[in-house]
Image 1 (cartoon, rainbow, N blue to C red):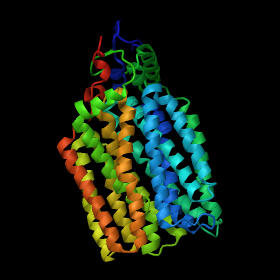
Image 2: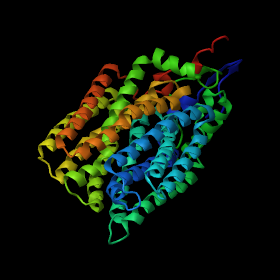
Image 3: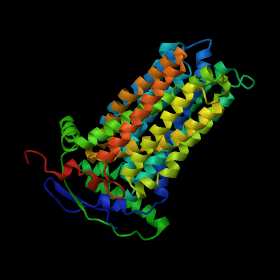
Length: 487
């Protein structure tokens, strides 16, 4: 095993860091990465599900008494915060490193979540939700980029989908917690919904401790002119893996030749996204926007549909949220490996298309009044089994589409645009449609969401690319592989 980079000449250097990372067998180190970084998704799922499950209690809260439209607006506030956080923290993650951002974004999330439990009116609740979203938006950029850079290429698709899918493990926990905190026989619902936010935020302290033992991404160090430090970290990882797995296999490809050039400028990002990789930019935008509208429109108003049209009491919503969450969790866990075996393009196309077709059928059945509350829940559970894998694959696609120097910013930018276009509009629109009390109006919202997923499926079939089993540097050559202008 070699702990040092290849030869260096002037601003040019050679490194074997990518090949050494990609050759590693799955090990305890990779499990630590997945747990320490992916557990944030569990906490996010816990909190977001609580908001959905607690919508009825917050609507009836004597201190807040939010209307259906205001609840939709607070969901939009959360997503607006996520957009701002993704852009700001994503920009920083490509400049100051993944590891520093892990801690900053998690602290923002933790403090804001706790503060939500002490909100006193609509505006304070919306503000704290926006700040919570900012922390989570930053997490999406830094964590997704780090996971892709640390996980071997042959496991990258499976791991990325499963990590993003664990959001729904937290959602399942949130559904169970909601059953407890909203049961008047156990606790006053006014205290229960507030305590749920406080406890959920406080759990982030455990994540902070887990992340203390994770290194900076060697690929980030490599691309920022620190090949020696990157090689040292990879050497430590190799020794850790070899101690448990035995002798390591030889690298399957050679060294990468790079030039020192620093972080990508906004001009570099613009030229790459809308010049060199224009098709990939269009693909990422369509996948992210369509799944964001599809998901957020349904999920953030889930409880309102059940209470308003099926007469389900607020403290029983958790029973209906639980199977929905488990279906979302099962999708990436069971389908994830096929994105590395069958391939990205057929799997992404198929999951988007199935989600859209099933949603169209369910929307028509809802408008006709053919479904009971449990049948509606079963239909949504099946739909989002496929939609969850599709949504996770959107993040995977964006991360793989662009050079390493701008990975976090690319994820942040497309998450922000997709969320702004599809996510912010969705909850507010559906909140307004639900308040109208007319099933046919809501049906048109469901059909619009279904149509967007079909558009996304067609776009993937036309513009999708094969990234399974390939190194990140092969899928999209680093900007540093080119000699900087003027040299």
